[in-house]
Length: 96
Image 1 (tube, rainbow, N blue to C red):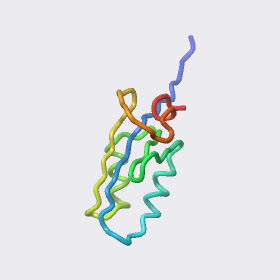
Image 2 (image 1 turned 90 degrees about the horizontal axis):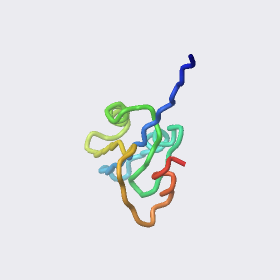
Image 3 (image 1 turned 120 degrees about the horizontal axis):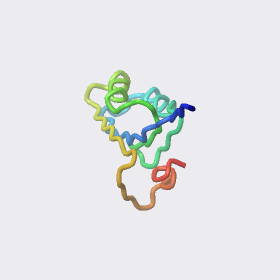
Image 4 (image 1 turned 30 degrees about the vertical axis):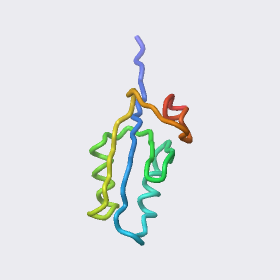
């Protein structure tokens, strides 16, 4: 008998509104780029592959962004979606 291990990764869409003008958000961008795979298809939107759930990502982001900034994390793994003229659309759709 063999045991199969499945390395499941979620695809999370992370969107944000950074409210404070002139604030240095380098730590936010470094965090988003730290995921095993990440794409930045729109100015305030990232899609990342991760084994973390939405609430874990939210809690980590709350330590980085200002208290008045807004963050939305949506699990798009296996969900229907549609777009037009978005960079990395094949990666978003197929994970490749």
